[in-house]
Length: 391
Length: 159
Image (cartoon, rainbow over all chains, first blue to last red; front, side, top):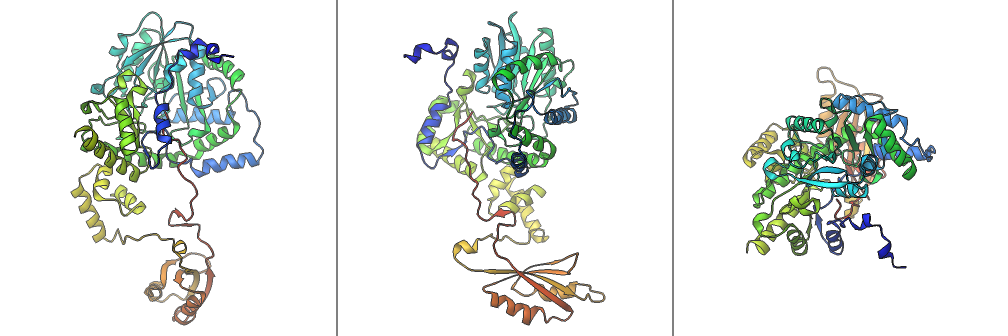
């Protein structure tokens, strides 16, 4: 059978991830320092791992309710109440998912009809556009600019809105730029969403990883926005739990029911092991999380200082664990820069255009790696610039 | 200052330029702060945590519970000083509970340690009893796991 002819057009329409190529090259090399990893370098705190082991010993191996363990949903809603003063009903307005990835996918499938347009500020996480396309929607990319520190503004969005626009999908603190939104800018976006009657899907997976006295504003906490927002979050970044695959969606009961319908037929429920660990993370994990955040912050300042010293322009990222230096003055494209650097100096990072066209001219460096490795990577990048770029 | 100390406590060999970048201060400022902290005896020493066993040395570590009769005016301090002045004594703590002083001693052999306890320690005036325990295997020392098998298992590049 010629399988190539049998793949659905929707899947064929999706471009393969730009990250794959670098992974393949780097995987064959030794002594690579990677600034290309989009996950914490910490192992999940022991108390969280231990609670999962204990759960297994106690025989917690069954399915759970489709929506997730009620205890976990209650912990989630009380966290949101504590941190953002928004009240959700744990029985009707929460769905525990297999990471934010699943939540995003089923949210799109639950709301989009063929041809519906989704506004996505770029650069953005690699799966946003694919989720929209697979759900039959149309991606409308909205470029953000380094002059605005990669924030999206209501004015910029207005240029792209049409009668077919149904959803605005935002992810701040942002992967790959490290950008954060401030309250005033978000307020204007809330007014914009209200004016055009848009659903806002807000991916706030990095909300705990913010620095320099920045305060995260949850989109659903803005005036009249709770009902309009599908709030997505999870445990991967804050609690170093990427491999557990556990996240959640909070929204109006009608959309949560619709998402649950897809979830129950495709996933059934998030793994019980991860749900038990997530309960422990919310009950007792905060101190470990804060320690990790303080460590990221020091690495952030170190890499920011280092990049500037070796002559790469970057704005100060105040969220997530990425820095997004501009490499336009090297005369190389992002991909050339990343590939040449990897081959010459064995430092892996991700070209900015993997996150959208307006990421061209930038590179994403993750500082979720140890201080000695960051220091060594900076030396190698400097050598690369001296010996291969500015010769 | 606290953040500087925490960084140094974790790794005393961090170069000043790195510390300065991480703390968002000038190198001069960091250098001055370190000097001041050393002068104030907040920073006591920069030791290296060594796995002697791995190097090939057989060291014996003993933890000794000591009961003493406190002395008028100086309490436990005078006896404590007579104990901690010995080079063999690695650590000494005043304790609550069923004994008074906890002494940690390192020696080259069991004999070495028993000699020290019987001839030096137990004979100090005011010490009423000692009880020695020998350490069999260290698992974690000063926050460092001795034989840590956990490593970075992440893929090289992920979104």
